[in-house]
Amino acid sequence: EPEVTQTPSHQVTQMGQEVILRCVPISNHLYFYWYRQILGQKVEFLVSFYNNEISEKSEIFDDQFSVERPDGSNFTLKIRSTKLEDSAMYFCASRRGVTDTQYFGPGTRLTVL
Amino acid sequence: AQTVTQSQPEMSVQEAETVTLSCTYDTSESDYYLFWYKQPPSRQMILVIRQEAYKQQNATENRFSVNFQKAAKSFSLKISDSQLGDAAMYFCAYRSRINTGTASKLTFGTGTRLQVTL
Image (cartoon, rainbow over all chains, first blue to last red; front, side, top):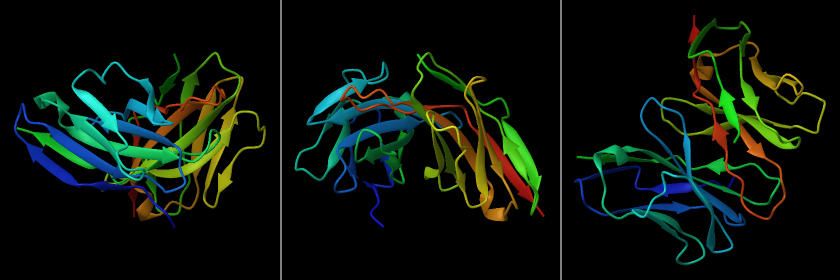
């Protein structure tokens, strides 16, 4: 069964460094998402992406964040200058059509020191 | 904006028993989807069940079923014949069904941690 994959599973970085989190959505899916979950808290929406552009973004998704679908298969989240409070689990999700369910990847645990 | 509330931070059930997790939501929309996702200790988000608001019939998936009360804006999850593998965090989530051509985000509740005891 096709699934969303994410790499790396765990990333440790120093405050102020740039990180890129990678996702490979399910191949025939058209809508892509990033969510984050700070430890012990609920899952929060960051950004949605469709037709090669951002559809919606939350107030969390400020200028330090960017997303890209560079090659038709990968979907990346870049954090330009990480802060301690960016430490969280980051989930990628995708869905095929407007009425379909979102499927989540296994997450990338980001630790900012 | 839509909100999702899960008022039970933790629940416990004995193996083979039945447990019900509560979820309420607030929306002004009439057409939407509701979901239950399971998050085991691995922290992967796994879809448990989905309900379309326009369907009166409650969704079921094997041992999992929902009680969807649209007027009350309530969406509870019933787990029958609980198993040790059901122990996890359970999140209720809402998504608009408005077909505007833009992608719709999921709005999650705060989760209920389910313990399964022998």
